[in-house]
Image 1: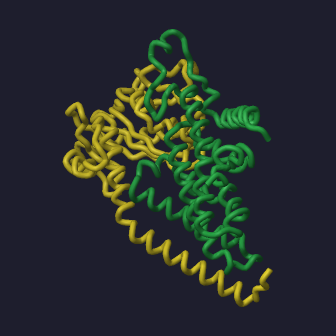
Image 2: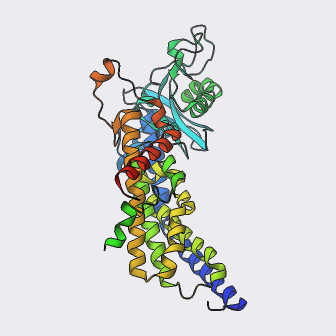
Image 3: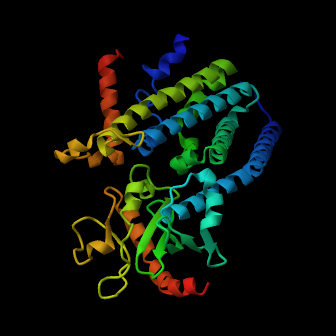
Length: 208
Length: 197
């Protein structure tokens, strides 16, 4: 076996690390605009999805500028035209999944009472289990659900295992995903954020 | 040519060497991520095998693991960046698992066992074949898990509604990670029954 001097080893690894770092930095910076465009288009597509529009991601940005008007400066609330022609308020939600952050967009009707639609996304939930929160079947189950009970008290839309907590009315709950208890709980918790925001949304909408 | 075909059957990295089982559990609940994962691992394994083989005579043995790790990480990050930029949906599907390719023992194993002692082109072939051997098992496991666990294939429903109406139920255990381990065990058992040791 050849004997390498310490100097050789030191220079060797320094050069290697530098070359790799430079190449990766160049590639990463070069592709950044493209990645940002993808992310922006995805956000537009998800907000429109929550409002009931099924739009291809390549057309989402253009469609979004026609259908949505920002309500706040931080890009967390928009006024959107829904697929059924009515207007609603889109609210950004953030929460915790099993492995990492989950987030989503909820479109609430103008009177702040009804959920018109949702779109969820996640950083690292398990494919086939927690990742199912992004699937059409799960998202569909939220449409038309009520945020308040019949006494006018806020209960949010709960994500619950079928057959449990029977005191929560059918109009206030959706079925959790089997095998993904913690991710479902994360979604449940995340929707509670609608309490503070949806109360202020009718005023927010009329102040426009 | 024949010696490169080993990883597909009698020298399969998952079935015989039991390497890379961890990621085989994670991405096989559905067919689509399994195929993308298989493809990514094949690319990373082939490229890093090739590069390590090219520079094999300059690598000081004392730091060879560090050098291997650097090269593997380089390709994994490249794959991740390219997926995010050009096939965004696919990168969404694999999410964190792309980063975990770095820790896939198959890749480091091939670098140690093959690339360090062979010429670049045979190393490239060896990388491709081991990636495919890994992918083959992934796809077979994912096929059964998605079919029996969700009643779908490639996200299309294949179990007819009439079956569900007649009382057929998806097997919930199939989509949980332990079932991947059991399935891999069954495949190893079946394989050992067919091929001579």
